[in-house]
Length: 112
Length: 113
Image (cartoon, rainbow over all chains, first blue to last red; front, side):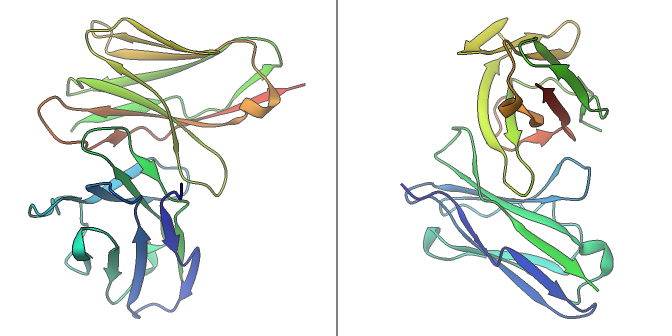
């Protein structure tokens, strides 16, 4: 079946603009995660959604970052007033409960 | 802070040899360790999971060990092939928590013909 899908695959924007990144998880997966991967670095946890529970936002680096998950499926990660240090690959993953995570191929975000 | 550390230097080996990658953890005790493979421009792909009460896990040419005394996991690829060339990520999960992973930065493996 289809895997985790992320869009856009690449995004270039000017500093100060807002960006919205989208994630379509695997159908039926109740858990959804966002990570950030900077060049040569490991994955940095951003936010976690599980069913109808309140999301764990403990990894969001600032209040410019927010995320939503509508209807328990599609998720969007929004970055407001982007800064150059926001440049990274943003990865989304989904899982069924505590099973291993399935990742999308990410959105490569470049802030000019 | 909780940390997963992997050798940042690339590992270069000859085809047919066994590749061994190291993962060390500090300041926490993961109940599970997972290993993922990541190819350039792609997301990580899950390979193996090992629990703290398991010493060793195997899957085809892959073998993972978990030593809670040394706070270390070793990942082995036997009879390595050029197609095994990729970055390998180690990630830990705490017991009782949900599936929140703490990742290492990964080790790049290059298998030469």
